[in-house]
Image (cartoon, rainbow, N blue to C red):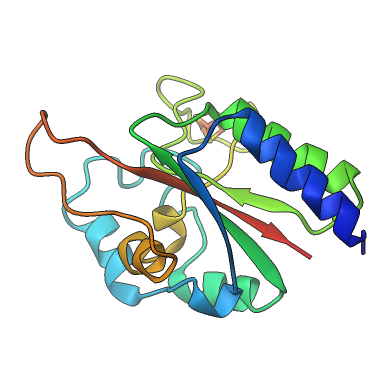
Length: 170
Ligand code: SF4
C-alpha cells in the first residue's frame, strides 16, 4: 500500500479536474440496493445497450462484496458536468501508479465511447470504459446524502443535474 503523502497526490490529481466537492467516505457508507437494478431493468431505455450497464455490469450483491474489499472511497461530486470516461480512467490510472494497486473508478451514466456499443467482447476501449455507480446497484442518492452532497430527482430539462463518481482505493 502507498503512504499518506501518495494519497494527498491522488486528491490533488482529482482537484485538477475541478470537481464541485470530494469526500473521503467509508465503503460501508456507499449504499447498494436491489431496487437500483430494478430501475435499470424496468424504466431505463439504456438497459442491455452497453457493456458497462446491466445486465452486463455487477449486481448490487456483487458490488457490496467489491466495496467490502476496500478500506477507502472518494466520492467525487462533479456538479452539472462531469469529465469524460477517459479522464476518469486517467484518475484511476494515476492512483494505481501512485502505489494504490486496487484503485478502481466507477463513473456515472452509460459509457458512450462507441455509438452504439457493439455489445461484443472484448470491449473496444477497455482502458477507458468503466461502469456507472448506479449501473453497479449503488443508491447514489443515499450515498451522496450521507456524504453531505446534494442530489435530488431532476424533474425537467431546465433542472440542474448533479453527477458523481466513486474512486475505490486501498
Ligand atoms: S467502450 Fe465501446 S464497447 Fe466498451 S462498453 Fe463502452 S461503448 Fe461498449
